[in-house]
Image (cartoon, rainbow, N blue to C red; front, side, top):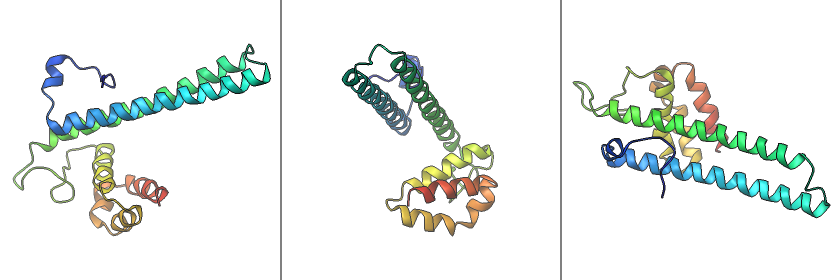
Length: 162
């Protein structure tokens, strides 16, 4: 697998631990899927235009550009999420007097609220059942204070999977 989701030198790449490498590979796979879906969508539009005899119209070029822009936006979100996850993983290694940082056992209050959102989301996304995930999150009183106004956003996200 060619890794091009983030730009790292060989030295920086070799400094990543196993968990970080797994994060990078998962993000790269997600990027590859986004690009493949964009190509499939453009291919379908091309076939439809070819069938209708309108392939030379400017519609295909405009739709292709729109699809590419949408894919780039999705990839940017995946990349940002990856960078947050790696940054949190670096912060999580240190910990405090209560031990290494982990949610919910020892949450890291030095993180920004958006980084906390990612940590809590990752914690709940490990649960296999969407219904159980939402129910557990709704009963999590620590998440209400830890996430602040991001609590409702994560609730809505988890509810969308049910």
